[in-house]
Image (cartoon, rainbow, N blue to C red):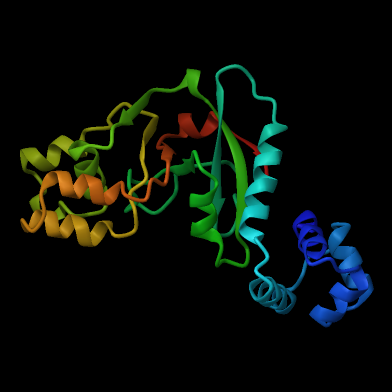
Length: 239
């Protein structure tokens, strides 16, 4: 965080003293922030946000640039790929498949190919942590779901939209779809999915419209470790 604060100050062409005056803190406080000895409290963060908003400081791009720089410095072992993970309260203990059940691909440890998607999920949480992670892909059973009607139905199943037809062959198809797999790979559906899926099931939109709507935001792909074996293949590279 100290590097982002310094980038903001330099973007505004301010000295540490001028920056401190604008935020109503001491010069020593800004110096500690930029040296990584402390971080802004909630009040200071809000003032910093207001300052950036007022002066159109591209903080989001600065953060993405910082993440990209960090990722480029990571040397991966053979067979590993780099992904991103956001946690509202930080990863504590061993990595485990313990997200809430009604996510796109069910309960698991969710990672994405683009940093912007997990950042968006966690940005409003004070204790949030962002991670660059890697996965050893050679050790696990994988299933990749293309962005088609099967993908949309698989997501609908995990989101509870088929609960009323439990026991039918249609329900069982998706219930058993990922059996024996450690890692599921597929597109990330956008936030309108409840509305769109419900409208599909009552016949208001076609299957192609359903797929197009859910994939419209192009949020990248998600890699979901759904077993303990897959989670053991995940390594935190940077926080």
